[in-house]
Length: 337
Image (cartoon, rainbow, N blue to C red):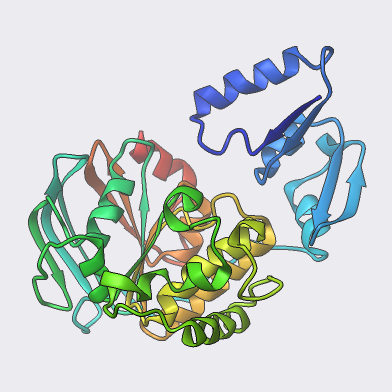
């Protein structure tokens, strides 16, 4: 038997096709268990479907190819799920001063001449293929342009380009695309992971206040409905969606006014996706700004006020998202490649 746990999460389209061909070739030689949040892969590859929810089997089907993704959504969360459409609170050209402004922002590591501004409460979506520079741009913003040329202004002021600790002091939060490698310490508790930006040189103070750390974590667990036995539980034992909510919660606790989110719903189930979208809708209504970097085009279209398309390290096009006539996925893909 071969166990395959999210085997395609970091693969390109060509690599996924090669992998699927391999899986189909060895079907007669070995039983396989394929775990994935990508429902189109489940439908296209598997002979039998088992749905787990909160650690228990809630559904099973012997003909998954006859199911739609909406059918599987309903099995997973116990109700019908539609793609979340965000109620937009700002419009392009807002009179408020931008939270972030970039002018000819460039880095030898992957992007050049990026100019953009982000208004309070606005979500700027950034699309692009692997290697387009979108992820590198997000990290550079969080690091306040360390090692970059061009202009970066936070609330109208030019910050010192001192890296991520200075970014935290300027109320910028960051959710990396690889949460297990860059966003969490898996051997630490929920409370300890939640408090990471507050401690040490990031904010200041040499002594960790354990009672406050726990109080803040308990408040975050309640506010974001994080499913965990408690603040002392190991973060590694939480589901992907709840781990991601802990990362989001840490930035909300310290009052971040700009969040840079790199594929924030990657590797989480459809129910957790909806919860993350609701969190973004709530916080942008209070004036928090978001840069949403995503490989999920429906996510960008439904959540963003504007979408920038990057190719070869440059912003090629910009779309203002009209809820009544949003950009088409096929048009965005054509611009990306």
